[in-house]
Length: 261
Length: 353
Image (cartoon, rainbow over all chains, first blue to last red):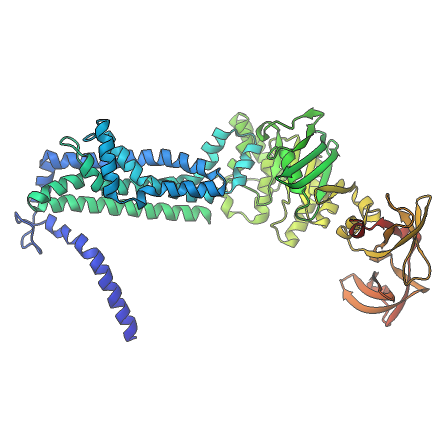
């Protein structure tokens, strides 16, 4: 009994260490003070008003959303093609290629950032939306390929044979059989890609410019000058969007399991 | 509906020859089973017919038209898979309609034909059911409806009853048979279940190691198997090894060590003087005959309407006899005999290889 309680305490402590620093930022966003302090003694929405009144904050939020959505779209289009192609390879070649696709996860972000920065500079993509989208697509692609690959591997190859036997050509089989059945994997990949891009900061610092910067980069710039509660507002927005994304991913996973049953 | 011909079809994967060059002709509206153990090449044969596999050599004809290199979608085949391969994200109606939609048929006609197909498999009005909500037997019937609704030239079935339990399998067997008799369609049916093959087929093809061992009606295969493999594979049989004394006018005499008199029976093709062979007698043909061969009963197996008995008739020679309950002796021994026309002298596959 005592042991069970001890275990629960330990688990609660571990959870607190993980969660507290993250949620600590939320009360600050609703503080009435002009500096960040915990706990706030007076509450207000003034920093929310300030966030949306400052065009640089709002622009950064829009850029972040644009980059995340475009990267997610690029990831699922390219990721689906890659997963379909890999699915047809012999096992050894498939594993080798899967290793290559994991590269961006394994490589240190700062190394990727330096490499991408020099590349982007030579083609004039630093400080452009396109540059950020390409970088984040590369970073998030492994998650898309993995997710879609898992869905494809679970697909009974005889379904495609059955459709072919009934007269369907390749495109029709893809459109009516393969695509609808791997859709949960594609959606999961999209969510992963969106969240990966949305909270990415290392590549974004290198590739952002005066006109185009993402929300994490804007936070980074602000905090180097002064920690005002408006930073907490930006952070709170990011937390909410990230949790929404993760919840959506879980929901899709459950839909997929029910479709199997 | 069409005639189907395999001419010299073979298939090789790397070094293993899964199909040795073989010929098989199926008549219009004929139901032919391909029966064999796993690894006999029967599914490969079916995949060649469907166009899922290209033969290494040989040609495949439908109505005397060479369609060896035609892709599956241009072949007008109806295929039923062992796991049914129903589309899980579509309802019953959409599954059955799939092949008709591909053929650009008007939706009014599709609805009519789907309804008729479901009626044929006794699932009338089940269009909007989800696939996951169906039992195995029901899924199997949807798969059958989906394959038949497109009016295929050939119906190909790959162990379609393999996943059903025994009682259901028996019912569906008879159902498929009746459906076939009502509207005959050229059918190639792959199975490893001898009973299934016997119940449903016009003719049965027995395969082993990529070769056809024998083709014939169920009666022909049962009463006149070509060799000991076919005899063993179809039904129960007593196989008594010996050596051929002579062959004359379709009859052979076999000398069996331990038996005073030689066994006489129909000589199968390939049986020649002085070769090793086996006499086959079905257990139901080993009957009580007072004064016949004296046998000691060493085992009794009650099978309901009949009882099977294992007899030792001589040193190293055992026979199974199957008698109706009323005929079963309660003694420890019984005298048995058989008619010469119930004996087949077969090349012994095990030893000639």
